Length: 343
Image 1 (tube, rainbow, N blue to C red):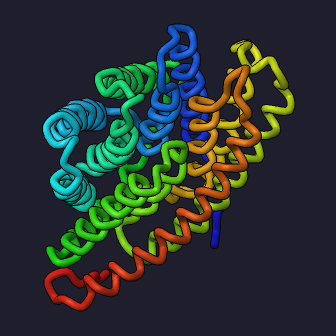
Image 2 (spheres, rainbow, N blue to C red; image 1 turned 30 degrees about the horizontal axis):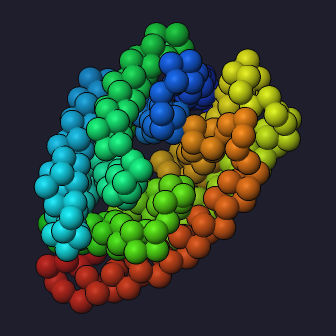
């Protein structure tokens, strides 16, 4: 498994600066204004700046559309069918299916990826009475708009030094492969939602996000490769988080100390992400893990060490369980010509 096969260019280094500074800025703004669910403001800039090397209007439109569509879906599922688990699950499956179909198409990958990740998390946590659903939806939309603004600001402060070579156009996928990818992703996302609901796992956001992120490669071989990298990224992200907690001790409410540590951590994992040049790899996993730990669990009265160790165990279990289910769904779909996966 090669992790460092991409040579680092000046443009790549600028992207690392954009990711680290953007994530730290989102975290800082969230803390200054006292907004809840800080994980959205910390991780969303990472997702946007990590997946889109050069910010553009097409990516901005996808982010805005994603936040609006998820808000409408949450209002439909949670508001009208919140008391009917069976109907709620069926609707969730078809919405996941639509999102993964957009991802499989390619040109709408960011829209589908952001939608399915946010919808899965919001459906689960929004089902608890202690969650203010309106606040949850509002925070998600605020994070999307703020992340777009941060991304454009980072492009202004740390612009590329030379024009990037356009990415080669992907080969068009055959219809049966697209059906395979969409059905597999929707099935895994729905099973993940059901398991987390039935097991009452309301403190496992990292593990739930992992089950969705593993579907980003859109096929079994990609999920298998991503699982190894995600495990490595999680362990490294958690290790850095514990290191930061030891340094901060009981000063975790001092932004002057917290923000530089977050910036350094995201910069390190951003460097790994760019060097991997593989989309969702170990570096990307480390960045998202660190963003969740800082955005959601770092507080003066909180125990980030326990949270970090719990993240490792839950994510590793989620990886193994998701791989087993993914393989079973992959074999099942390949039995039918209309949903067979072929390269």
